[in-house]
Length: 488
Image 1 (spheres, one colour):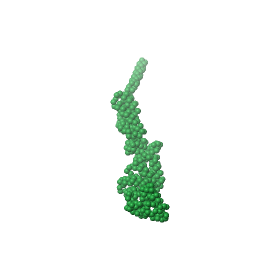
Image 2: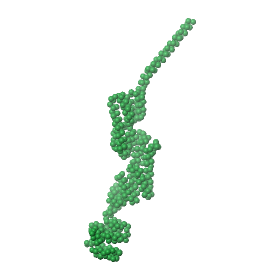
Image 3: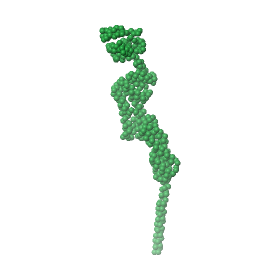
Image 4: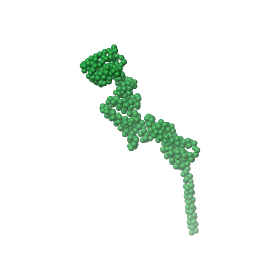
């Protein structure tokens, strides 16, 4: 009985000891968890932050800036006192020209590391880059393109080399200065980094467009529209180019079909679509000039060919067509000059040489007396028309009827008589119309030779039917009531 009680007492003590031991162990574990875990977590967080910072640095080296920023943000969240993470984030944001966020990170770093010279210098560069970018945008609006390019190249892209906004702005400025090849190159760099950059596709397409490489321009517009079918500027560029090509083809087709007036309207319409598209418009102006020459509209043709030469001063065909236009407007010397220029540029072209010969002949003829003009008749006038005109003018300017201006009348009468002498003779008239020299016959209209008033010169006889209505004194013959011969 006593042993049983003792045994039960021993077992109770053992259970209490076991329970006490369990309690002590749990208490120790609880203390460890409550007191040591924050310290362990802090140590683990710092280790994670350092790892994130290292990974961000690697991403920056290969220009994966967005990945770097994700890691830097995570590192700062893990360790808000990690100053290097703020500095790296500030620098990365500056390169991307996210200036406001970058400035905040620089200032946070300087709170942690006051007086840091490197950070202060980078912050100063940030402020310069931001100011330069704002100035460049303003200069673009005021069309001061060259100065704006200097700001972008020498400041913004030096301190913010990954700034997409600045790169696109540079391409816009290159387009504005008509440096299309450089615009293509710069936009190409952007598309290598981001092949789906819609703005870069649009700008590069425009550069090819203004070089008249329309197929390549169209492909850029189409790619952009596949990515964003509702992009307003891409749609405008795409349909504008389609309309230009359609109008140009219509003009060329009408020219080939001989529908010249329709071709004129189409050429003018195509030019009006984009007056600044010089690389294409030079051919439109030239085509328009050719049509106008065919239509005999010399003054308009002259304007069109001059426009073409203003764009391309070495365009041989434009010199040829302008020469033809000047022949139509009777600018003989100008025609010779233009056709000489064309012949010098293309010395083997027989068509140009023939046109030059025509112009030189016309110039030579222009320096002779225009007998048709003197008699006031057309070049197709009949012999009867010529006789009537001569009789009328001879009566009007006979010196005996112009006593008060006898000298002028004598000069006029000489010209009238000389004109009649040539145009009333079929052989002489034919030679004159061909542009041949007939000065040896005394018909040059110059200082010597022909003199109907005698003085030892050659004598000419002119016969008229119906006679003069009254007698003239001072010369042989007097008045003649019927048919007569008038001797000088």
